[in-house]
Length: 140
Image (cartoon, rainbow, N blue to C red; front, side):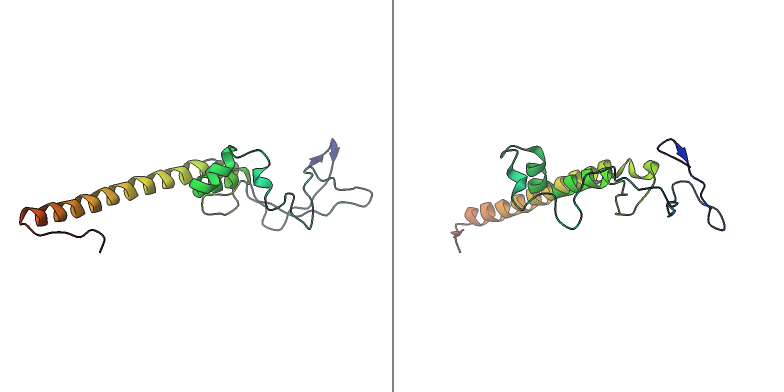
């Protein structure tokens, strides 16, 4: 394995490894591990209201508020997770965002169809009762 231009010999576990499988390898003495991400350890990077620091029109804020599954899918894709939340290879995780988006769109479609049918039925009942001279009190 090449690490920062230097070769590092690793012992493969018994039975070998599969493509995309992660294994832990201790660094030899004299080597130091360098974090490639400057994320804080032991605390949150941002405060509770930091989602508003980019203003009220920030896309992720609105996305998280109105379509949380789409925002979750985007984050899961960045973390290389499958749509079920499991770690996976790049080939398995490329569709995560599209699957979450598809689930959201299908949900919105079915929700609107059910609302339309429910209101249509309700209005038919109100119109039919009015044809027979009955009064309908909508407030009660």
